[in-house]
Length: 464
Image 1 (tube, rainbow, N blue to C red):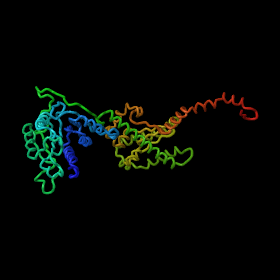
Image 2 (cartoon, rainbow, N blue to C red):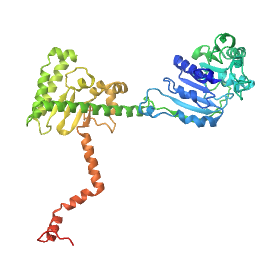
Image 3 (cartoon, helix red, strand yellow):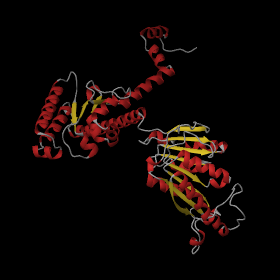
């Protein structure tokens, strides 16, 4: 039966639900008769759903497939702002559970034909009368299509209690609408062969129900006065997907981005510094000459160019230039604290903005690169999106042990040659573990050397 349709009929049913979700963007979705959770696996990838719930009478079948709904590694590495919670329950659609109220969408895909007619009435009362969702999608086989299915004798499945004609399905749906305050439109999937569509309809007929009055058209309180609250369903599985709305996850992702970008900016600075040093000549004055070249190149810019490439107020520009040249000269003269101090336009390097104003401070003598937070915020779109402002970025990084800020809290400090230091530390540990360092130290001691000299015969070494 399934090979007659392309895509297969079950995929067409699922796609119908997915298309509905894309158009209507429900926040809370419940799948009745979820079985092997195949529809839930598709729905979990659609942004905007906050709560995704599955219910099935066969708990063993649900347990067999439920772990396939767990978050993927990419969900942890690249969490989004979506806040998805997924829950799976064992229970009957003919029982009322107070937790199952207020859903935006309830789906019942090829389920009601597995119920007795008496249970179908209870199903209507539970779904439309008790759960009162905004929308309900019900699909069921169309018995008028059965004669066109090759090799079919009787119902399509041995567990089916009935299979309705289009008129029978319409009669049940309209009755539920009148009784519980809904409206319905009829459609389906699995088109008939050419020329037979009007005669037999779709292979799977679908009713899409909408509650009259929308969100204000039904009572979604947990207790309807005298009605007692029950929780008969058994929770089998629940999971919260990682979300950037969780402050701990937001901080973790932000710290990762900040560390990545500080290293990137540091690497670009080192490349630029190497080029400048190579072009600055050789000899003892290479550092000062390199700095002088950088200063001279900056002096070539006219006031018009500075204004066009980085529009700021005149007062602010004069103040920045005064601080830059004054601090640069003072650091160059005070070589007891710093051997060299570069001010480099890294923003121009990383984002191509063309700005020539100095942005990054690097103190090579102290092996420390100081990356301003406003530079990180400007250069990295993800840091900007996660933090919202430079002030928020500072607050989020303030207590993070992995990030070292300067005393003013406005720049990230990163080692100039961090990799070399780590390699030296690893080599030192390896030597200590092997015992070689201790042996070498003892072999070089003066006392041991004197003992060796006393034991050496005048004619040289002798071996017994």
